[in-house]
Image (tube, rainbow, N blue to C red; front, side, top):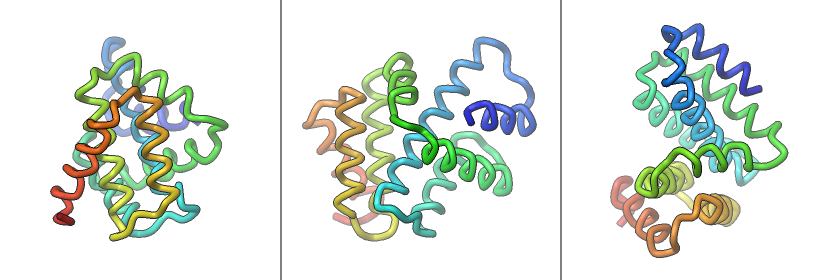
Length: 153
């Protein structure tokens, strides 16, 4: 499935040089983890999908149709994946601590995108934050920052 996502990017953007391939793959892993959050409660709400689409659109500077295809592929990858290891390992290898905490904050924003926090979504964010070695106080701060960004405080 990651090949399908890579093929998608090959069609949508100019072929990056070898140095950028690792970053592109890293961002695809990030997108798949973000999909894990919006599907944690067994359903993908329109608000959550729209929030994910906006996040990915800003990151990759793609048009709406291209981002919709990426979201579809990333959701499929997340669903077919047996575990998160392949995604988490790549992020742990390449992201510094600050980028990991920023990712956790985006996960919180996705979890709250539909206006409520499902216990399964919270558990998924917590588990992924632990796997990313984000300390508890930074996990909580990321949650608080997500509330502020979304105007929930």
